[in-house]
Image (spheres, rainbow, N blue to C red):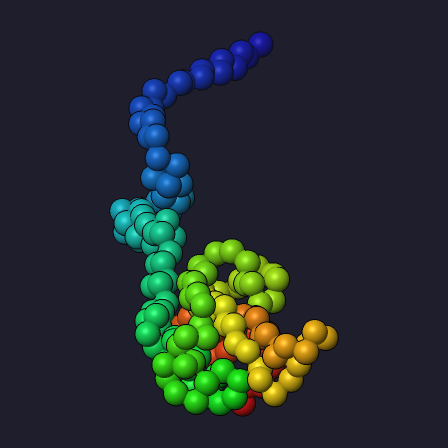
Length: 159
């Protein structure tokens, strides 16, 4: 009777442990490639490095200056009842606020983008309230702080 002896050989292959999963991934890829192991490893590491780069942040938008915003509002409010000169119109502007995050006072909703808000008070001498006094105008005008376009005009008699 013939006996077959099976000999098992255990090879000790050193395993280099890496804390970096990307390096391990590329080592496995290189080991699977029979002829171009080092080149595959290098190419893999370059691709992984590109994927792991942080995306570039967008630059903050340039905001129009407070004076430029006021000039736009003055041009918008020109005429009765707000005033016929720059000084008269500037006197009817009671406050100017830059809103980066918060509520737009004209729309009573969150501002989606940077906004210049102006509170305007004026007296309309051509109309009367119930007591016979000239009507008071009190409202807000808001501008997009990047483009300078009017977001909301909560005031009457604008051109």
